[in-house]
Image (cartoon, one colour):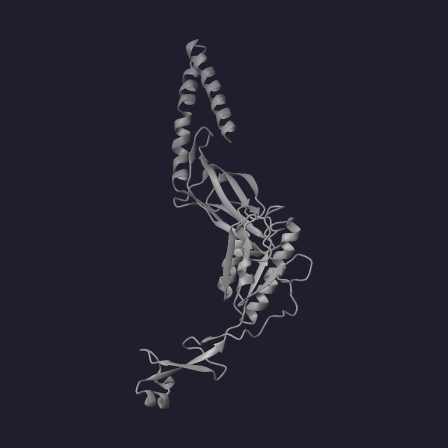
Length: 334
């Protein structure tokens, strides 16, 4: 658009030079009016365009923030004007960056006769999982003649999360016993009768006081209920590979996560950044935790090759962790 702007300015200068030549050589009285008209046209054009430009607001929005893979999603650039006047032309450059694949698209947008409510839309690529981030720059509002381009501020929309399709993992075999007991948190019901005795602490319920033992020791003794702590499943996967392969891995990861959430079994998701090797670790105990984890996973790049996650040493050394490594095609194994 910069080249077009300068082309119009050069064309105007040629017309102005022609009118000036007619004025200098006194070809006729009409050239005096033509020269004056050509000389003042840019000022008149700018003055007529200012009401439509000064009140102009550009907004970029999307119809959804989260979309499943292969579903429809669009970005929209819309114009608003608090004064109600149209703008002759609005141009912009749209950048869509797919963080997962590293792909970037650059789209030019031109809105002519841009009255309030006019918009331009473009589709988000949803063929593969990932975070699609949209940014708009070089937004310009042009005057009627196209000789002046004034910059505009944009209220951008952010990003779209293209999430995987949940693949049914079937029956998940998890260890149901660890032999380790921990105190039951306050407000949680106990499923067993195991407990340990400890001195009374302010805030303990009087219903938990062991009165016979308190009488023997001449001090308040409290029952603290115990529950067996189950090993925490740790879902790991390699954060690299061909796009179709990583999609299948994420489908299986989402399926395992959904199954564990439905069983109310807290778990962790871990992977290694394929380039830097930095460890990623997210504890998931509810739906919100899972979406935070998924957004982080889809924001990291996924090149064709990278550093394998493999078997995490911290998982091997901790008996309370149970690792499930997610593969694209084979059955999950330790």
